[in-house]
Structures are given as C-alpha cells and as structure tokens.
Length: 128
Ligand code: FES
Image 1 (spheres, rainbow, N blue to C red):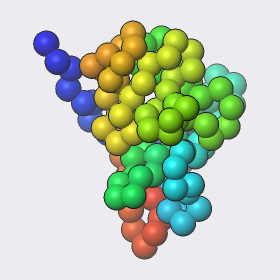
Image 2: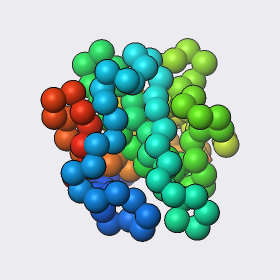
Image 3: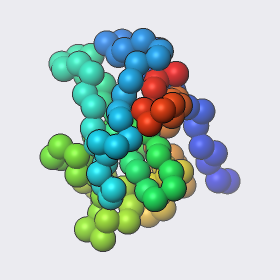
Image 4: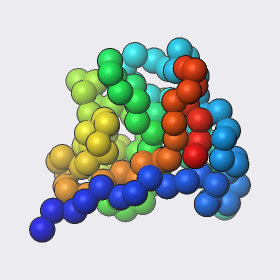
C-alpha cells in the first residue's frame, strides 16, 4: 500500500518557532538549484526547515528524514544529490523528489518529507 503525502505542518505548532505570518525566505535570495536551511533554535528545541526551488515551483520541508529522523544535510545548504536533481539524506542515502518530498529510493521508499505550511506573497515565502 502506498503512503500518502502528509498534510503541511504549521511552524506555529512547534516549540521555538516563529508565529504564523513570519517571512521565511525571499524568493530572490534562493539559489536556482539547491536549497536553503533555516534553523530556529538550538539544543532541545532545534527545528530546521529547508526550501527547494526549481524553475516553476518552491517547496519547504521540515529537515527531518522519515527513515531515522536525522537532518538530511550535513553541511549548510547542501541538500541535493551529486546530479543536483533530487534531495539526498546523507545519513543512509535515501533520495526524495524535490517538490513532492516523496522518497523515491532508499530505506524509506514511498514515505514523504513533511511539508511546511506557507504561502508566497510579493516574492516572499511566509509561514502559515
Ligand atoms: S536517516 Fe535518512 S536515509 Fe536513513
């Protein structure tokens, strides 16, 4: 049985994160290929999200692999595989579609990254 994509998560429902309506990213500041990470708090309340931008879409996910719960990246804003095509979890090598967040290969194939609820307004990505 195929898993379905989870409902978007509101940052306001997590501890140590900003309230609804917070500017998360300016679209113009995002790299064309690759991602950008935002960390809201460190220590026990650490929450990290990241954005992926393609030519025609923007997706924001919780930086939490559905396999074992580790952050996907090891270093800063590097989230993509060597071909720059899919999101790569650097712990055990799962790969995910950049926009849907579906795991397409690896130990959690068929599961999804958690999308973050947001809207794009006047070139800015705003939390919902
Ligand atoms: S924690 Fe991501 S593939 Fe295992």
